[in-house]
Image 1 (cartoon, each protein chain N blue to C red):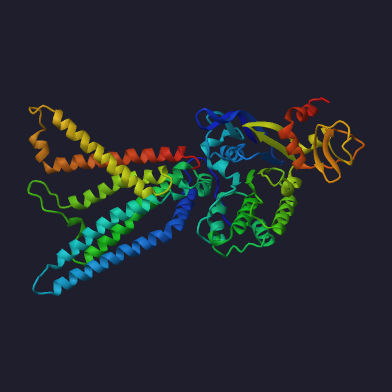
Image 2 (image 1 turned 30 degrees about the vertical axis):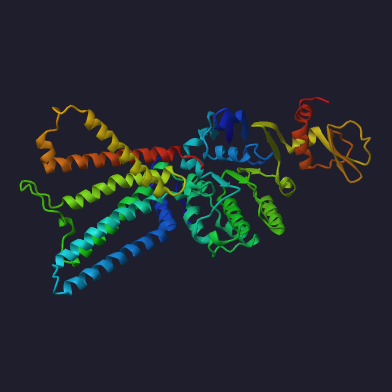
Length: 257
Length: 279
């Protein structure tokens, strides 16, 4: 049996062994998720196809493709959050935490392995498959955007990019939740997000009500879609980086449940 | 190898489990960590393995703090917790995924242990009975050849023949570099495996002696009458008393770990005095 040379610092050998371990532990749940998602998309495709055949309500073929890919992207996001929530579920139980905490790999290797599988590989596989499905249905998934009124801005890939960035940001939050919470990680993280947004909503309402009327945001800023999307993108990337950092720190400081 | 210096730990503020605890573990020895329920044996194991962080003080493995959980330390540690949950996979798959992390993993020893303990590694380990799972994990633990092996109640849930097989297996291994710590209440099951006894009470180590020291300073004598002379601690047995006395050369030593444990819990000062030249 080949053993891993225990070097200091980041070891690719240990990293791939941890990735393999994560995959074997989670593969059943993931494969069920993929099968379920594919099934839903197939059903939706069949329904839209029947609608296409129905001449009384004609529907362009590309519309069916857009519907499939848009639904696929939605499933990609929420399925991804759910699967990410379970990536470190061993840590949540006293009886299984020792298996992960005493696994001879660095915290960074465990962290990157979890991220690699739940974000990078997941995105490559799911979005790659959606892309192929989109091509087969005669559409380019990257171009599934709503047309914006501003003709100066080419927003053709905004929807796709926005979905990816939203997933990147929220994935990092669910990734933290998978390390932080002891059981029911998905629901607890979801609740934490809802409560945070509710708090921020109430806070902004209070701020708006106490802000004098003469102070207002720049018209240009509010009404420039490019700037709006750019700002949102920067915020989402910042959120992802911040929560990934917190996740790593949490993993470093995680003790037996 | 393991050095615990002035360690303090508490689950809740104001309720310390350990305060200023000191302990050192040496290679080549098998330590028995004994204590009443709630004495902190499992917590101490979790601290030694880097799974719990002390409030003050430190625990180091070959000079490196264990809380850093470096792979160099973790590849020299294996812990078999009292309660554990194995992943849903076959024993062979578990070995394939975990064995590469341990540089001196001995596949031959694993197969020998699995065969002697009658565990089928082709089956899903999560679906085995608790006793079978424990035997699988113990076999894996022995085969890792790590420098530090922590066993928390290793024979709990095991049938009588398996306990005996496990004892024989552990005794047959020549491991001069390995330090094994066994935390147990089953002193009759595992007493013969130990060569050092450490007893925890109220967050402190109240007794920490090798068997050689124990035999050098104490005698365990069965007497037929209550008029058995000066003893430090005694328990009634059928037809007389089993006593702990100052060492006597001329008398047969009926060592009993359970008696020693009860004696230390009841009379820690008097027993420890014997090792400091007291009478």
